[in-house]
Amino acid sequence: MKLLTTLHAGMGKKTALWQNRGSDFLDKYVIRGGKPLYGEVEISGAKNAAVAIIPAAMMVDGVCRIENLPQISDTDKLLQILSLMGAKVRFINPGTVDVDCTSVRLSNRIFSLTKQIRASYYLIGSMLGRFGEACTTMPGGCNFGVRPIDQHIKGMKALGASIEIGRGLIQAKAAGGRLHGARIYLDKVSVGATINIMIAAATAEGMTIIENVAREPHIVDLANFLNSMGADIRGAGTDVIKVRGVQKLHGGAYSLIPDQIEAGTYMTAVAATGGALKINNVIPRHLECISAKLREIGADVQEGGDFVVVRREGALYRANVKTQPYPGFPTDMQPQITTLLCLAQGTSIVTEGVWDNRYRYVNELRKMGAEIHVSGKTAIIEGIGHLTGAPVAACDLRAGAAMIVAGLCAEGTTVIEDVVYIERGYQDIVGKLRAVGADIAAISEPDDEPDGNENRALDDVG
Image (tube, rainbow, N blue to C red):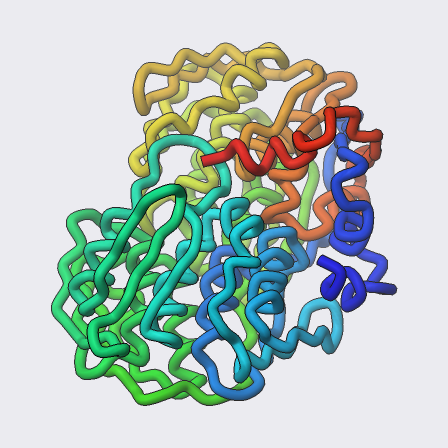
């Protein structure tokens, strides 16, 4: 923490304030809703790409420069983990970092951080690829249902690693000190397992063929990153990925893709509040499933080369939404689109096709007047035309984004607690929204919890 606090000094961003304040204060967001949004928003680098690429940088011999890096708490924690393992981490500017993992080594000093973030499971693949062994905690992150790592373990075993899980730790060791290529068929499409196996296989001996893989844009971005560092990976973005292992990876520079979900969140926000936003630094092709659904609901979406313009003046209409792996509608946009449908005319149905129990945030929307009935993976939304401000909490990262969307369009004042979840994935969201006309502020209050419980919000998540 001390290292990165020093590195961020003078950056003047929300991330820097979050780092320096530590756990002595808790933030709340206060939103006075009912104001349409007008102007331009710049989208940051993709969170889901960053949290895979930073662990993958552990396998690189030499300096690895990562550009367009989002300034969020998850990336900060991963860089802290690499630092505790002996990496040299140096910020060139707020969005560019040099990472030199020449001297990295296994260390149990990282455990207090790895249990706080879901993406820490990518360290299994990168440690095995780098050292031939791995030791880390079970991952943390947002708790919205059972998210097993059985497909990760299946992949590592197929590559020749023995795995032991117990007392909250995952320990793995490659027979003979190096992984070996294998043919791996994933029992279900898993973004995390696809990424973890791809990282581990990059320096395994021989060819690895991974079938029934996920195709999300950040998987393609990780493959491009590894290839730029000397890996030989083909097929990312299709159903089959082939990885020919290389002896080692070399240094280089790579710029992350824009964040599809951050862009989708702002697109949904202006559809909810009304107004017009130009959303810059995006890849419109990655947003097609979101754009199509917003048009169906009543927003106007126009695409440019690296931007989209979203307008909404008239009524919103009912729609049915089912989340699916890419290129389907993303599960990480489900809470935001459900919030928007609360304002629509008629009855909408949202079906969660990826995760169990991702509707915990619905109770928060009900506090604001929403009429939503949940049965299993299906939510039935009766459009009520408007929401009313209320005290609510962010149950997880994307649920927190949904609370912001709800607060922006609600009548009256909304106070959002537990915004630490939101800061896991949205860079300077308060500043970006204020710049386009939102009445939103982050208010810091002392953390009055007893000693030893100050990290409860992070330690208790699954």
